[in-house]
Length: 226
Image 1 (spheres, rainbow, N blue to C red):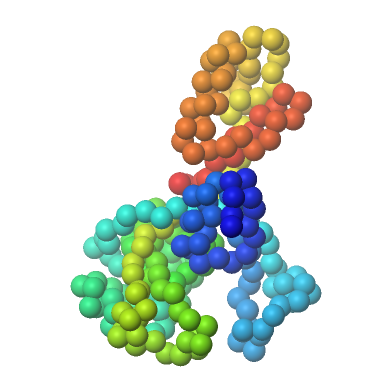
Image 2: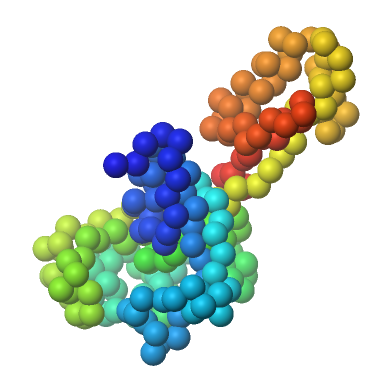
């Protein structure tokens, strides 16, 4: 069971990653270059992961309500998924692959639908688009089976919107210079301790967190483009 303050590292489905973040735990997303087809499904060694430029990135994942926009792109190679979406009344342009260039060139507010890794969804969020995941709990014995629309319905497939953001850092209150004042990186001064406390609490109220406090320097960690 994940607890508040815990850390989870991996390539989780968005539904699980959102649950981890909602519990107050930290989600460190493992990302790497595309795994070659001949290595797909195999256990990767540390050397394999180094060769694939594996990295770990702190991310915030949140489930949200999303209404598809007028411009919808469905990312899937499966005919069953396309038919299932049509049954939900969704008309979409279908693409088998999605690149970062595709995301950056899409009209602002485009809705992307599919099963994509958190890092890709973070790019969608950062570019001002929407993402709706096709959430489905597929049993292990069906992992390599071509799913039909009927099978997806039987397995309880559903659509769920998500926002994903990589964490960045913003030094908002820093460098205590005497007993009753704070000086911020932007040059703003909180002349009393109470004012400084209110500034910190205001940021925390937005869902941000104090990442570290060393030598009187306070950095606030915030999700970018959230």
